[in-house]
View 1 (spheres, helix red, strand yellow):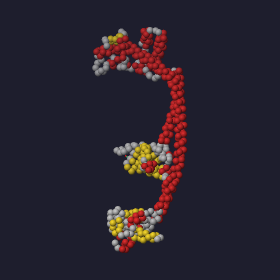
View 2 (cartoon, helix red, strand yellow):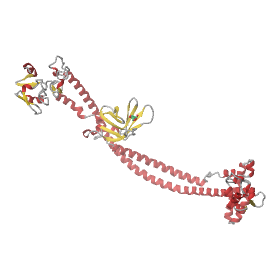
View 3 (cartoon, helix red, strand yellow):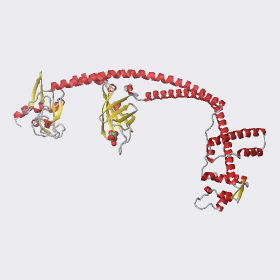
View 4 (tube, rainbow, N blue to C red):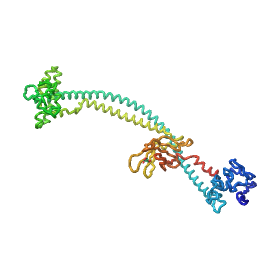
Amino acid sequence: MNLILISSLFTIVFSGNIEQTVLRGIPTSLLPKYTLAKTFLCLDGSSTIPFEFVNDDYCDCRDGSDEPGTSACPNGRFFCENKGYIGTIIPSHFVGDGVCDCCDGTDEYETKIVCNNTCFELAQKTRAEREARRALHAAGVAKKLEIISKSVLIKSDREARLRELEEGLQKVEDELKGKEELKQQAEAPENEAKDKHQKLWEEQRAVREAIARDNQMHEMFAELDANNDSLVSIEELQKHTELDSDHENEFTVEEVRLILGADSVNFDEFNVTVFDQISNSYKKLSEQSSETPVDHADVAATTEAQLDQIQAEADEETSAGEDEYEHEEEQQDITTPVATSLEHEKHIHDDTVPEYDDETKKLIQLADHARNEYNEVEGRVQDIKRQIDDLKRQSDVDTGPHGEYSAFIDQCYDYEEREYTYRICMFKDAKQISKGGGSDVTIGYWEGWTGPENNKYLKMKYANGATCWNGPARSLTVTFQCGTEHKPIDVREPTRCEYSMIFETPSACDERIATAAMHQEHEEF
Ligand code: MAN
């Protein structure tokens, strides 16, 4: 290393009476370690070298500390003083590489490259950026303070409303109890009357069915007893081949006997053992060959009239205490000549419950009124409960230590992107809504604040969303940054089905940034 080079690496600065020697590329804080002496101790303490080896463009120390001002050591570090701006450290192999790395150009002292000193401009730019940031935080903080003071009011209003609703609920629940009693009182006679009506209807229906069966049986017996000997014989029944259960072969005497249970049956035997076996398949011979049209309306009218008559008479007989035999006789007298068809029997079995009588109608009306009153009060109870639940849910939400994030309660925000709209409903859920149609996909349900320990409210998480095909359940992490409005400004999916959102809000603005930026400027420039 020649003397000229060594002298070029040292600058002697006079400041008042104090002589300072500044070595190139050394941060001020480390200058005491580079005092002009006979020897230099490498900063890692690994070896001691003659002082003239410092910055001699040959790497002697393992940690590169002997060459802060040259590019000789691959691990060397060069300090740009950058007067008027911020001092920076660059890898020392950037020194003399023909590129201006330091804003004061000191890294290119050896080369022919002319580096303009841009430190002043940089300082101005940084100052402007800092000022803009400070102003943004100051404006945001003003809004945040409004939110905080509003949240105090909202909180106390909410608590007052909650108390009011809970007291109101007690009263309305008492009222409901009263209405329930009235409803029960009105429903008891209503149910009794309805049951009575139903029972009567069922009894009448049973009578009708019995009569219908009886009519059918008489009609069938008369038709089967072709020779009028008051018996149905094997030959007479055998004509009804529709009763042959196997349908394949002939309707044999044995088969017919099996149905009759004898060679012939009288009316009573027919009633007890035969009728129910054959009534579903039985067809009149005349209907089997050529269907004779039956005037159903006529028959129905006749039957109904007769049924009414039977009913009236049955009632009368019951009250007059006449014996059962006479009643049966009479019933047979009336029903025997009735010529009904099976088709018609179906019709008169129509199962519609008849209209209620006036007394029952009145009881239903009273019970309806009591029910309506009960339902109206019940509706009010439910409404109050819903409001209480809503308020409790709102007060349970963690909106920050001072309620900074209280403006988010029950609010949703959209972020439009080419393919999807992302909708975040704060403290609830987040959705991905396809612009091409199709159903919305939930990308997460509110889980909690997940910022670092010293800044918990920086991030929030929505988890357990719709599961990805062959992947995890979707989730969203929201990162807040200071802004003057509440709005999402970016949504990405850095990992499949794991979404991230940047959200601007005054609630994330920082008082320290709003006030501390100017002090920093003094410290650093
Ligand atoms: C949908 C969207 C995407 C997601 C895929 C995963 O297309 O929800 O965001 O990556 O499903 O299959």
